[in-house]
Amino acid sequence: MLCSSTRLRPMDSFIGLIESSICNPVEIVGSLLTLLTDKEARVISARYGLQGQQIRTLANLGVELGVTRERIRQIQSHALKKMQRNAIHTDISKMHSEVMKFVLHHGGIVTESEMAEFLRLNFTDLNDNVEELVLASVLDDRLVQEHNKVDFVPHFRLSSIKIAQIKKTSELSLKLLKKFNATMEQEMLLQEIVKNSKESYLHFLPQTIASNLLLDRRLVFKNAKYSLETWRHVNPRTLYDKIVFVLNDITEPMHFLDIVNSITAHSFDMKKVSLQAVHNELISNPAFVLIGRGIYALKAWGYKEGTVSDVLESVLGKKGAMNLSDLTKEVLKLRKVKPITIQINLS
Image 1 (cartoon, rainbow, N blue to C red):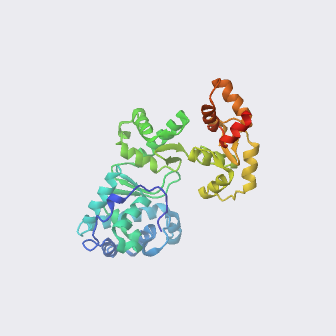
Image 2: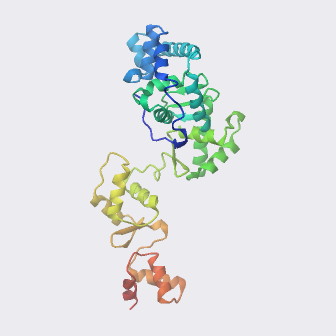
Image 3: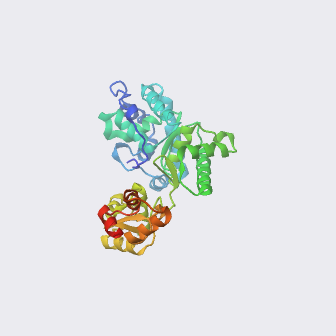
C-alpha cells in the first residue's frame, strides 16, 4: 500500500477532471502487464503493490528471486519502459494530460500522498485500485517516481528535474535556516534560496522550490513558515517544550487544564501527560507566570511575577500618576483579575 503523509495541499480545483468511462487506467495497466515476462510482471506488481499487496523493496525481492537488488532494479526499469512504449497505443494519454496539469500546477513536483489523493478524487469508482492508478501515471515518460528516501518522502516529478537538484535545493534551505537561526516566512526563504544559488540549474520557479522543500523530512512547514524539524519549539520533546509550544500556538495565556488538554490533543509523542506533572512544571519553572486563577502566561511575553499589589506598584512606577480607569486597563494587560480586585488593592 502507499505511504500515508500529512504533506497535502488543497485539491479543490483538481476534482472531476477525468472521466473513467472514457479512460479506464486499471484495465489498461492490466492489459500492458500481459505483455511482460512472468518475472517482469511479478517485479512490477510487487514494486507497485498491485492487487492490494504490500509494496516490496528491491532487496526483499532480490532475496526472494535469488538475484541482487541491482538486478531487480534493472528488471523493473526494463519492464516499465516496455509498458511505456506500448501505452502510447492506448487511451491512457487522456489521463496523462490531466495528471501533467496537476503536477505542473505545483511546479513539477508532488508528493506521493498528493498524487494518490488526486487520483482518488478523480477516479472515485476505482478507489480500490489506487496503486494501479499510480502505475498508470508513471507510464507517462515525462514523469519520474522517486521512492522513499531517508530525508525525502516518496514523490513524483518531471523527468527534467533531477534528484541532485532536489537535494541541493534542500541543503541550501537547511543552511539558510541554520544561518538565520529562526523560523522564516515562505516568501523570504524562497527569495534567499534564489539569491544564494550559485548553480544556475537550481534557479527553479518559486512554486517548484516550495514543492521541493515539502519533500524534506528535516523541514517543517506550518502557517506559511519554514522551520527545522530539530528545533525544540517546533518539535517539542520535554514537558517544558510542550507547554511553551501550546502557549505560543495560541499566543495568549491559558488555564493549566486547557494546557494539559492541548498537549494531549497535539499528540507530540507516545508519552502520557498528567495534570500534576504540568501543574508542577508551571509552578516551578520561572519561564511561566501565574496571572490569574490557574491561568499562566510566558514570562517572555512581558508578564512578571508578583501579586496584584506588586503589579500596581510597577505600573505606577513606570507610568506615574494615573486615573483609575487607565490604571485598571494597564494592570489587566498583566493580570487576569476582576477590576474590583485592583480597587481593593489600591485601598
